[in-house]
Length: 117
Length: 112
Image 1 (cartoon, rainbow over the protein chains, first blue to last red):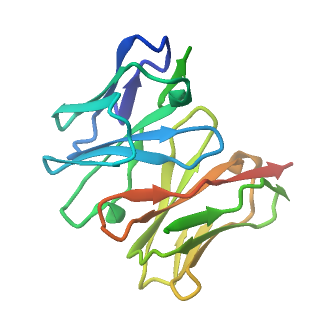
Image 2: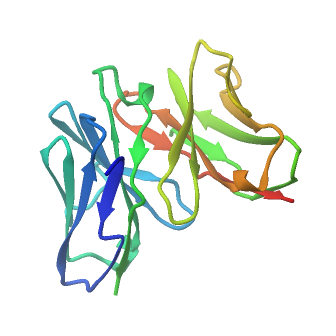
């Protein structure tokens, strides 16, 4: 397999459920990201794991919890979500040389389409 | 506040013409700017990166310009084809240098 793989591709869950999204990258990158893409809104960065540090967007609610066990795998744990959390969740990876995010292209998976009932 | 603006209305052009998409930004001082393509149901795909000291960058039929005085980047596709139909996103690093921020994208429709 090559690139960035996300599973599942589609997920429907109730507000009281707990689920996890998975991302795996086969590019040898050292940085991974979670983005949220809602209809008619720009991509919103949620979390970054880069060079063993975690950076998060302070506006992300605590019902989203990331986990990065190694440089190839990234999870997004979900619990007690709200209907407005329905969106496409995208994972990306890049090679961070310690000079910030803007210099390297990000490679995206095809996302998990999440629907909250 | 920091803003990235792309035309939210779809751009419709005829096959063979040049498509020009605009990315304007305010309250950013980006050292780099990136352009991505996104097809329906897929993740964005990186196209080009341009640095602040580069006025223009080309890749095959694609050309990007970066004017830090106007705070604007233009993305051109020459000899456009129906297969170029997609949403195109620009992205900048925030002033803290730790987050890549995307514009809302412009949908391009190339008609045969």
